[in-house]
Image (tube, rainbow, N blue to C red; front, side):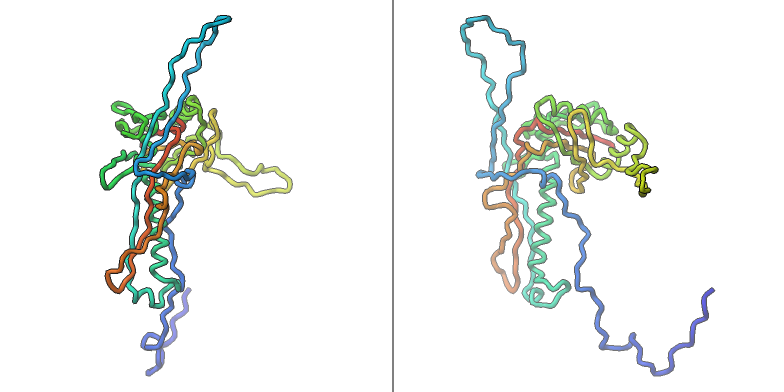
Length: 326
């Protein structure tokens, strides 16, 4: 039961709503929720490119064969399996900003120089853009503005949807052909990991959207057992019981895979990556560079620039499962 309100303030009471000297209550912190995690970029080691067209060579071995030679045999030269020469294109990613000198001099929330603060934000945005470029099935182009091929364009392992679905050639020159959307299954996952292992690698990272991560957890917990309990009920001393409905690591027949949800990768796909065979190749001197541009008036203009490409040093060490409903 609420109490009845008291009477109104007496006449001529000087109140806060009419005062002119009340200071504004504005927190001296700028809050940011937008994320900056980029699991594919962070998984790739760094190795500089020296030309806009970045090339590398991949050597494969002849298949194992029944090899029984006669005693005292006369050597005959066998056919040489030539290395494969691959390439990708250095793409320029840039985010720019302009701030008036008046705003730079003003007392703003956070107490920072607004230009410097904006430069930090632009750097985070470029990193997110790079994550999208690495994980997208976009095909390289050397014409200006240049564009790199994403990792899916180098994947021959994995699968696309039924019907018209065709995997890429695997040299970065195309992205294959989309097929009919289908639900993710553990059979698809295991088949892709099997292909990577058979080729000689062992995938250890899976990049996927939040929807696929959620669906993957459902698949694994349903296939393996009911919800796992972290603590056994009758332990001594008694401990709280934690219900686990998520899967962060998948132990397959072909290795242990870290499952990484990625906010910036395209939907409807999973990338299985062998970390040792993925490189980020910035052009020398162009790795997340802060640039100050020419003054055009009473302001400061600048930006953050990254110029580089993706280098899958052994394309068969990765796999791509695409055309998923999730």
